[in-house]
Length: 89
Image: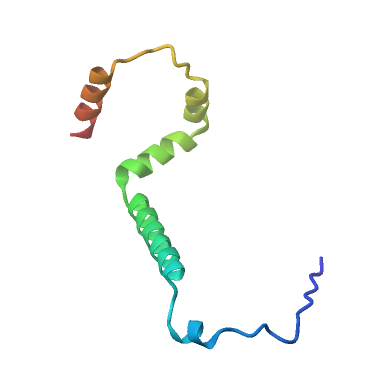
């Protein structure tokens, strides 16, 4: 496969004041979002509970069980909250 790029030899003129004023608010926002996403990803990679969960859901047997689980087991909010609190300790 060959990719051919056709480029315009003259670049569009830019406003000199925009270049000298530094990064725009939009650029800073995007940069902050990227930094936050990177931090979140690194945190997830070093979290043992997250790692264990990933191992479970990527196991073919477990993921098949999860995919076929039905929502017939209704649990009230207080019971679910209690179970979550017990597992979080």
